[in-house]
Amino acid sequence: MPDRNKILIVEDEPLVAMHLEAELEALGYEILGIAVSAEEAANLTEQEPPGLALVDINIRGDRDGVAVADELNKKFATQVIFMSGMGKSDPTRRGRSVTPLANLPKPWTGGELERVVKLSSVKASS
Image 1 (tube, rainbow, N blue to C red):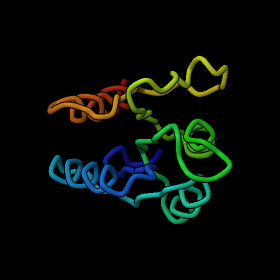
Image 2: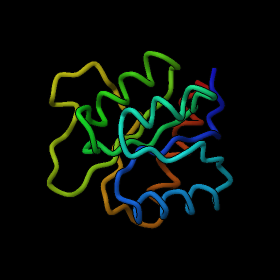
Image 3: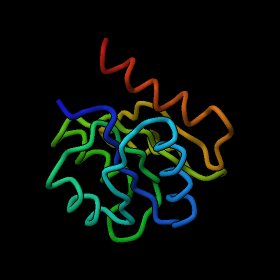
Image 4: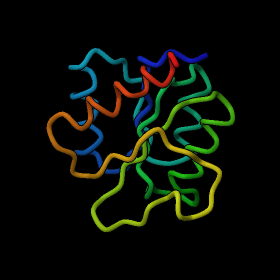
């Protein structure tokens, strides 16, 4: 089972990705990489699968974040936290087979990120 302290970020907005990376590293997590597309996410996970992935629903390329999450979950049993901007549609309504650990709205507030990421550790041990 992948290490839950190793996180993949799938986010195509550089400032958001850098902010996520800094916050997660400050909380003691290791960032395996930042992908801006499904193809980059697949390439980054070839060497080491993430235990957790924070995935923006709307990313570059022909496949969206829901497709990335589905692949990560099926291939590595990676837990996924979806991120989406205000007013964006809920990915679970789209009928896909992905069940995210949580949904993190963008922009997130103070302790929201820490709370949802720590939830992955609780879920992993249950």
